[in-house]
Length: 337
Image (cartoon, rainbow, N blue to C red; front, side):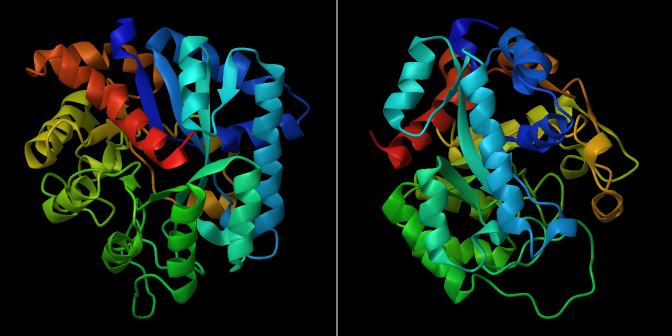
């Protein structure tokens, strides 16, 4: 991949592995386990999302999230080639120094403990992207379940969820609508003043799954000035048992571009193969098999994605925007100087 086609990944669960490896006594986990393939594949930066296992909810959510944030900060301190970007200037500086820019995210608002001031505290620690829910209900709103689940009547954002969205706008935290159910999605679009992202969602027109976005939702994210990061999780590309390939992924890219244009489409791979060995029994039972995508199973395969997009007829400028520039543009707009 050429330098012009370097990539920015809007969703990575690397912190999940880092926390567990560091607890076992390892250091420089990203440097040793992830950075070599990131560098070879041209992954210039990514949002690294803090996620709290269901087994730790609700009592230990804050403690686990703080531990994950500290683990990522230590990884950056220990590795010269990594940079924790908290401002637009920081993103630019990482690129100029040829460092991998990590942007700290949070997947699910459980760690905020229903207290808006906790968002301010995490912001001071470097949080810049907030995915309001995972695929479960929390104090901010209802998530979109992976599969039909017995529950009460779903809702949109709670009063706390609205407060969080509004405070995120004030602070400069990018709100992420992936994993939200539809009522919550539309609530975010109503209450958010700035651009929002869907960091790792695909197109429901091609794969009818509640985690994917309708064409109207794709258009709403674009109208708000945001970006939809398409995810390389096979379950959201094809029905269970069918299997999926990188060509299915490219079909979703093409469809999203057809709906919203090349300025509002990005990538949020959500590569999960390296996470499953660390899942608790409870999480493994709750989360479905993500189904690997042949030809796009992990970071190493990203190196070929620019060429594959070119084979689909995307010009050099469009490829650069989809793989990196759109995501960086929105981050820079929200993070500020």
